[in-house]
Length: 264
Image (cartoon, rainbow, N blue to C red):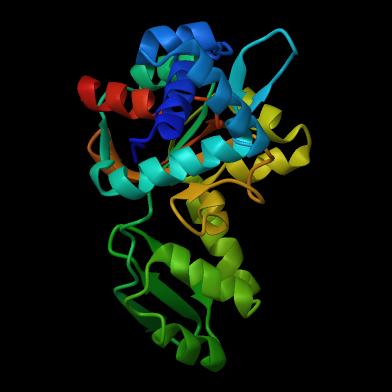
């Protein structure tokens, strides 16, 4: 992820310094950090600005990385580190304080290990979907029975996606109801609203958000410009969960993940 040429070193220094306190960085500070002559730094700052990688909020202020630069930074970081980022939460109060300190929205939910093991026909009246830890009961129809047999071995969220695609309304509603019991923790809902500034924020409030994540790192269109979200596998008080962290692209997610791991 690190760059070794002067332009890359200067850009990395701007990004990492800005993540510390969100204060624009000037050539003098970069000179102290990198021991590169200020005149050389100014040349590269001009190039970086021309390439749209950094910007100035005001003529007299220092530079900050652009949203696109931060998106690329987090993509590079996540590509290298996502397999290491299975995290363990042992104290929900710690997670609450972390959400407040870094101004992030946090959602913890289960269900990723719910696999459809078997289905049962009860007197041709009901169909029971056995997920081992959970069950769903649907009205029996021959068509539903034949269809549901093909879903054995699928996880809950994949089944919900399929049910949505084929408009299996009763199954969608039953899974939506079950999802409410899978939410273990949620904090800083105000931040979720700030990300959207409209009613779209509700899609972050339950584990249905799972369907909006095509990958474990998302920017637009799921989040408004300047915001992002991470979906991380983890454990919460001993339960296997997914953890959603959402906030500004200028938030130091490396520090957040490090603090979580150190507190485990």
